Image 1 (spheres, rainbow, N blue to C red):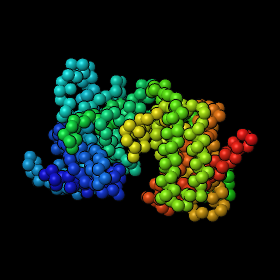
Image 2: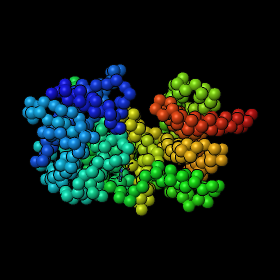
Image 3: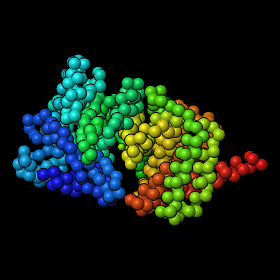
Image 4: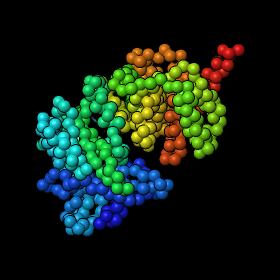
Length: 490
Ligand SMILES: Nc1ncnc2c1ncn2[C@@H]1O[C@H](COP(=O)(O)OP(=O)(O)O)[C@@H](O)[C@H]1O
Ligand SMILES: [Mg+2]
């Protein structure tokens, strides 16, 4: 059964939006089964699949599977494969997050953990003994859990993980790619919930487990995060696109003359982002980069630029100017303050609610390793992420409308207006009086645009023009700044 299950899982993973290894050669080489979930209605358990790539890399993925006796046409989209199982007989495996009985069993796990909280001290010893096998449900003190009658529905959002929404009260995110150790999304939500941050959805609980990896080593990590569902939320990316569309539909108005103007939202989003940065700096360690660290950071940016120029020859004409940005950053004689940051901030990670903007998804950049994702960095990396996202919102809409000179001019106006509003909101909370502010921000924005160019060249060549236009603009700004610096030296 193992080999057959591994094969079925390989083909299932390859088709999933959340699978990070698409386009690479891989196979599932090991499956560790956690114990059956407590349910009378269904046989289901979380399987931890180890994926091995041809280049020797490995990843672990979480796939809860339900084993049914008969195929269920209503679950065709969640079909994993048919298996002959020594214990179960001939069964059909489905991705279990799509079964109501399974999402109910997960919620029941949290409910039971909640009841146990009082007795936790005595049970801790017992739990430690069981840890190798049983997943553990943890509930945050004072958390209000959804009612057991609330059915869990898989969210239809485009995701790199899979979320289950319970009624309108809680959302359970199952991390698909899992790592041993703490998950930054849970760690940050936990700390900011305790800190009573206004700009995150409160953490309610999480699931952790131990499993055996392919080498037979025991690993421990976190599998899922339960948090308050923001029922009045609208996605920041959707709001920005709507505003841009409203503008371009009007024959000849400026962004500030259109009903759907986004600037006051962008400004509040900037302020919320700065608030979150202050909260993160208050609850986690902060540091000041040494000159060496700063040079290393700049060298990494230069390496990414060099790689992008090799892959995308049209970037060559900008390389020299961009290099001056990174050089200025490397030799900045003012120490850079670093702290925990979001790490993957864009408009799709911000939700507007009746109680203001909330930031979500603190996992960091999905492609990075766990160690890289918790490394302290400048908050201006997040600011740059949001600036690039505003630029994308303008460019993507322009692309849909067809690019006339007049429309491009107005899309540009929208991007500039909202980028400025975001920065103003950010500065109203964080201040931007450091003389190096613009220089550091330009280096981070350039680094992000270079990353986007590589991504688009590989995945969506028709969108490559978007980051390339930004790179051209950043190169011009770098050249101007370099000329000004040279003039000052004379
Ligand atoms: N607390 C929440 N309340 C309401 N909707 C949410 C909440 N958290 C996430 N979502 C929705 O789920 C989507 C994916 O969430 P996210 O945490 O970004 O997952 P992923 O790690 O898969 O990107 C979001 O874009 C948003 O639409
Ligand atoms: Mg996300």
